Amino acid sequence: MANYVITCCSTADLTHEHFTEREIHYICFHYSLDGKYYADDLGRSVPFDQFYKAMADGAETKTAQVNVEEFLEFWTPFLEAGKDIIHVSLSSGLSGVFNSANIAKADLEEKFPGRKILVIDSLGASSGYGLIMDKMADLRDSGMEMEEIYHWVEANKLRLHHWFFSTDLTFYVKGGRISKAAGWFGTALKICPLLNMDNLGRLIPRQKIRGKAAVIEEIVKKMEKHAENGRDYSGKCYISNSGCYEDARAVADLVEARFPKLNGKVEINSVGTTIGSHTGPGTVALFFWGDLREN
Image (cartoon, rainbow, N blue to C red; front, side, top):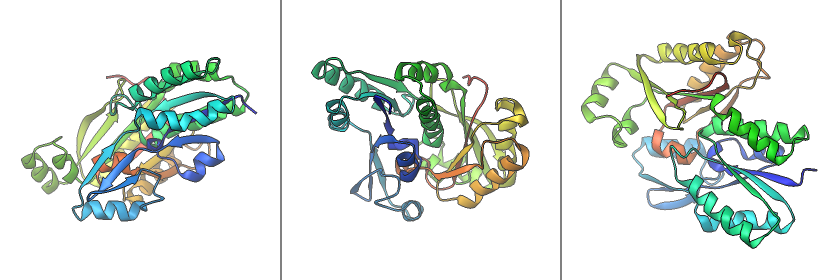
């Protein structure tokens, strides 16, 4: 058994069962739905279908990151048990939680001399961040030491591609990312924005594509272009979706048809309530290992 534990935030958007099976410990972000507060606990308090229906019906959402005190409470039992910790945070391009984790790290390493906490900025989000966590569990199970895993992730995290599209512009308008006029015209023309995550961990709009079928085709073409070994890609592929499973399934079917050497079937997860509070329903995200991400 390893003398360290792997931890992350709930925003890695895998299932509770997946995290438990892989022995990955997670700490929950928080959100409110029409003024009532919940833990972002992977759909256990509020099922994802209910959450996204409430958003579609006009519910107000707000989110809150994990604070320093919560990290102190989360990590202390591991340190008391004589375990070191390697933690990966949601992208610093989206949240300040990486800073909170580092403040807690400094406090606890002073309180527990001889124990070590390594903190990594994933520069990722949702199940792409989760794919990094799953790889770390593979490396741990192969016998790799914590410091070796740390260096591997730092060297390879920008090879984890994140591509997103949305078929609903409502929350792009609501969040101020596009104007009301652009949202109206985009909706009328059935425009689906295609975005990816850059090398600073920020979501960047890349293309405006007309029609759902066209954007589904284009997101898979991005994988063909960027995946490690192209159509001979043999790694894992994850997809997450916000209340639009059928669209996610359509992407997964194309991926499985075009990448016959995949490591297993495409795993489809839900976009969690933290990230989903900003994307709204109608978002599909595709994650895979490939070439280095650039601006």
